[in-house]
Image 1: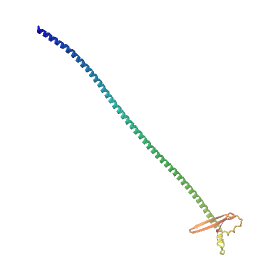
Image 2: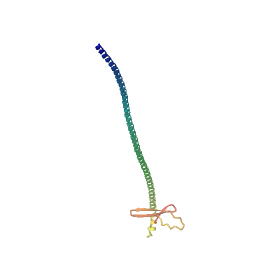
Image 3: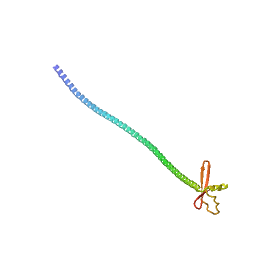
Image 4: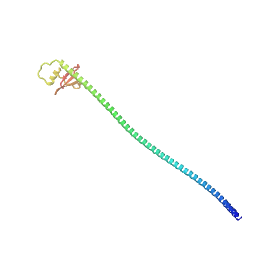
Length: 219
């Protein structure tokens, strides 16, 4: 009977212990699950935070890349503007040089035209002077021929005693020396012919008579 009591007592004690252990185990499992849920939440939050950080980092990299590209584009635009300005300056310089060259060519062309005009005028003057000289030479030749014909047509003078040279030359010309002009009388028309024979120069003056004929006298 005593053994049975001990057995019952042991069984009761074991049952009590079991009843104590089971709620403790259940309590530990709930705590572990809650801890696991909290850790999972923290892991999710950390993952989201990491993802957000990565997204922000990528966005920052993209922004930095865009900023660099914008800076490069600005630098390229500024370089292009500088190149355009230098090209404009160079073109303006070429235009100024071309304008100066055109001006000099126009001046040279105008100077050449003026020079050609002056040369033409001088040539015309020379031609006119040559024509006048030719006409004067023709008149001189005609006058010499007329004078020679007049001398040839004059009758030879009769032999006479020595006379003054003036009278002798006038006789050779076929006419006696004209009397000196009277006071108040009209001056006769005269013409002097000069003959060059080497170093000898002979001048004869012709006087127009009332009948229109010419007679030579010594001046």
